[in-house]
Length: 421
Image (cartoon, rainbow, N blue to C red; front, top):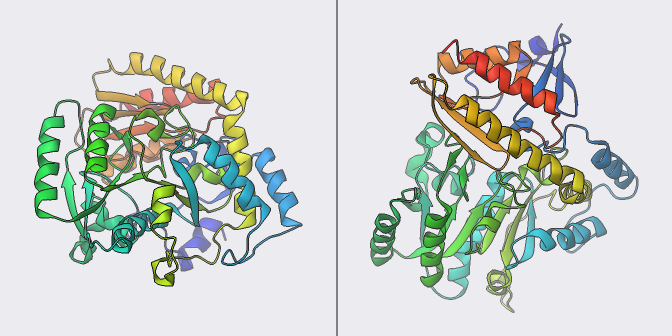
């Protein structure tokens, strides 16, 4: 019996309505930018498996480092213990983060990293004797599937059944370069009638909102307002972090730096699950006390797993390497050339690019998970490319190691697909 048939007996997949989509593709091997299924087909992974495997699948540099670490220390409780992989990772990461970041808190997935960021923001004020119970978030944001993260997310397609149970959140428009004054007016109105603890946002690119890209100056205006009103700023860089926007972090493109940053996905190069919530010294000091109850009581069994820390450290070394930095520049230039060509197509409504992230909107109306979207998904797979349209948006976020020929095939398959919509 094939793997895809055995899968149906017990497995429940994420973001899947199994009655409408009963079939899955069984992948048996991945290497570099290629995925191989049980029928012998190969696919270019043009979204780096949800933006994680940015150095290619089964990268030898990362896997060899982790294999060596496995022989020395596999797992140890991180409460009361420490170890060299976590320490070395913290030292390497602090060097490339925005310069106001100084402390690192470990967890195991992006949603939880945001959950921790929210808890830090709320408890920061609580520890100082001030109860603030409201958060601010951007419209169309997405921050994960745990309750705090869902609360600050604005996409009801994911969160509808749970909205009655959310934290108190006020939403503001995403800055577009023309609405800065209106946003400031909205913020002033919010702080007059609410006790605001924090602002949670995806810097520059809102991933689940179909790679919606927005104005950095407008975001900087919001962040300055928050600083002036002692509102803790939480940057969700789970998707944008580690080179995707052309710099190590999207927050480095913006003058006003966040108090807290949430990281995961490409952190370990896609090899192992891990997440981090980093913060400034000021945030940390609000929890540093003779009073035990002022500590951050949040923990995970696999926090700072030595193998995941080793994978993350190897990934950061790759990110900083001359070869990867040159590859990033090459991909950005290739996207720019493709954009100049494809934006003139009559089936293309709009295009956009930030760093290695490229997206185009089709000039047709489509449901986020509708028939035409599914038709496009299958069209790409049938031609050996793994792309995952978000409604009428087709986007590319390929591994940094993608070859010129592989990237050109991705472009060609997208252009061919425009003839069926």
